[in-house]
Length: 371
View 1 (tube, rainbow, N blue to C red):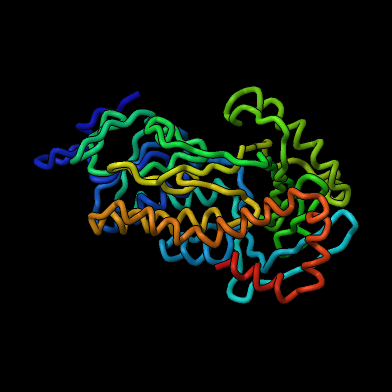
View 2: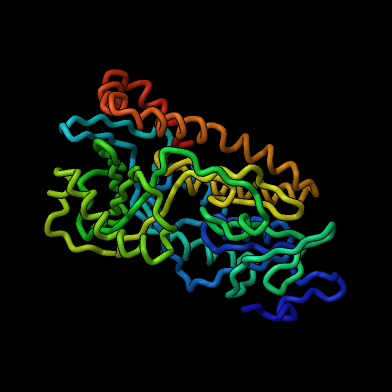
C-alpha cells in the first residue's frame, strides 16, 4: 500500500521529505533521530506495528549504552558488568568491563524508546514497506514518496538492497540464531556465554525476573529465511533440541515458564559489495553483518546512523562508505576471526582454557568489544 505523498508534502521544494528511512528497527530509528536533529524532514516507512520484536541477544555493550544516551534514549533494562565464558565441563572465566556497564534490554523496550525519541525529534511515519526504488541525480522515489535521500535500514536480508542489485556474499560457515525469554531471576550480573560442541548459548539478564537465552549454531543446509513458514515452524523444535546440548543451562531453566515465542534469524553473515548506490545509503544489518558472536550490533547500528547522516549533511554521501569501513573494522576482523577459528573443533575446545590462562588478554579483548 502506498501512502499519498500529499500527506508529507513540502510545498515549493519538489520533495515530499528530505530523508526517507526504509525500516523502523533500531538502525532506522537512530537514523531518523540524527537526521531530524540535523534539520532534515524525515519519513520512516515501517509496516509493522510498534513495538517491533526481533531475534537478537539484547545485551547492549557499554559503548552502545553511551551512544543511546547521547540520543537521549535510556531504555529500561538490567545492567550487566561483564562477560562470562563457560564450557560443558563446568569451567568458567569472567572479564568485567573497565568503563561502564552494559544493559540487557528487551528488544520491544529498546524499540519503544527509540520510536519515542524519533517522534519527539519530528520524524513522521508511513505504514508502507519499501521494496522498489527509482532514483535520478536529484532524488529518490519509493513507496509513492519523493525524497532527496533514502536510508535503507531494512534488515539482514534487505529488500531495498536486493532491489538495487547490490551483490552480497553470505560466506561460511552458515550460522543462525534462535532466541526465547524465560521467566526466572538472573543468576549472574554478566552475559553468560556457554560454548558447546557446535553452538553457543547466550544468557542475558533483561529484568529482575527475566532472562533472554539465545543460541547461535551452524547448520549444514541453509534453511529459508526465518520469515518464511518452513523455518518458523521448525524453530521451536530446533531451539528445544539445542538447549539439550547445554545440560547445566537446561537444568537452570527447568520449570521456568517461557516468556516469549522462539524467534530466529539467519544465515547471519551478509557482506554487501557496497553501502552507497547513488542517493541510497545502507545502515545497520542491511549494510553488512558478520555474526552476533561479539554483541556489538546496536552500538554499531547507532554509530552507522550518525555517520550516514553526517555524510548527507556534508553533501558527500560517498564518504559514508569509507567511514563505515573504519567504524566496523575491529568488529569485522575480530568477529570473523573468532567464527572461523572456533569452526575448527580442536580450537573451539581450547578457547576457554586459553582465556583462563591469559585473563589479562581476555579482559582487554572484552574491553575492545565494549567500546
